[in-house]
Length: 512
Image (cartoon, rainbow, N blue to C red; front, side, top):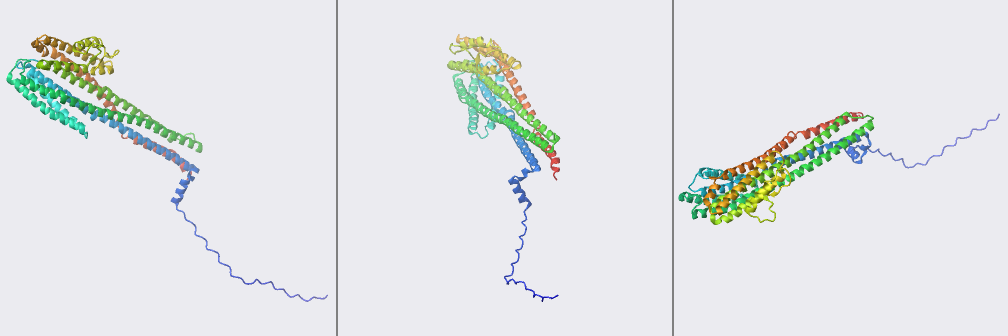
């Protein structure tokens, strides 16, 4: 066997040398994200809403925000309620009623002066010289006190302050003129109704100052102050009623959100009810219902205090002051024959302001006025049927309720007719030339004229007291209804919030 020679090994081809391989780049450091930034981006991108815990938290946040809103509107509405009762019941309302005392006190001051000058040296006529003087001094003190209250009520109102100051200045001038007339009266020791001319001139200046300046300004003070109270009442009561609407609407939103949360949890976690959320829902219903009911009742109390109390008291105080001024016009009519026609006309005007009977097509004079009273007022039964007369007592009759108020009004109307019958008799005597008989009748020596006017004044005061009681009761009810409500809204809101958190906490704990 022949062996072939071995083949030489073929070397492998060599790769030509090239550039060395470049090194691999260093790996970039990992980006470290802050937890807060990531959460914020997640929040704003809404990714948290894609998770069940996020949706549960969203329900909780909405419910808590609605509860805070309910607490805010309820607190604001209750604040307006407190302001309204403070204005009507404790602050401006009573002060305005006190300014009505200013008009009455000034009017009765002049009435007492006319009586003092009329009786002359017969100091036992009427209620007597000494008693008339004491009443005059008492009314002057009341006028000073009422003027101070009016000044306090004026506050920053420059026009009202100026009017009050003018009344005080005019009152000082009036007292000086009255002092002159009384000095002449004492020195002359004249017979009743025969004051010397100088005394009549001094009294004319005094009574003109009272009638033309002081009384109109005092009346304007009461009107302006009363308008301020009425405006405050309308503003505050509207705010209370608007607050009630907001409380009801916000409470409804809270209720709907709580129900939505309850349904979401029931559907997601397959549980029928969440007891804590049920309690929170019931608590929200109670807080909303009671709060809205309280505001409704408060608005009713304030309306009663203003309409049945404040307005009527102010109206009847004017009727009383004008009645006293009209009664004084009888004395002026007898004291100053030169102005008898003027005082007769002012008496008629004031009487018409108190009661204005329907006279039909008849001329408006005293004779027809007396007849109209007997025809219209005598047949009227308070609280029954249409009211056939106008004036302060006509307005009172249109709002009078049966019972105590109607009885007091009936007594007032009967007493007023007696006063007018005495006036008619006095003027008939004076017109017949019997001035002495007219003075005796007017001053009560041969009649009960003063007693009858006192009965009318007492019945009018009793009627005013009925409205004062209604005012006091309404304010008491309003104050009582608000008692404790400083703490109730925040406490109720806190309880509801805690119940919500207690209700969702176990569900959120399942995801930890």
